Image (cartoon, rainbow, N blue to C red; front, side):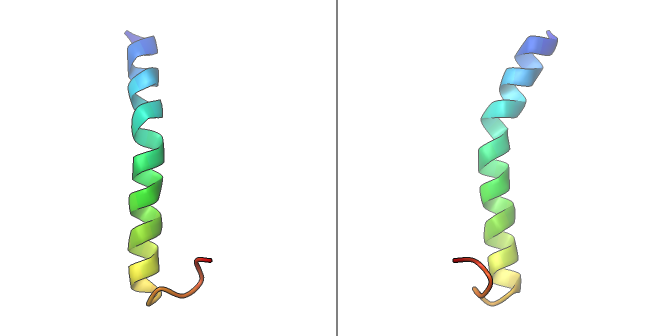
Length: 34
């Protein structure tokens, strides 16, 4: 059970970080990221 949760969290980790980075980019007006 915990291994399945761990695998699921790994699958969602990168997309969630991408969404957070996108939201931060929108808030900062696109500046500060690359």
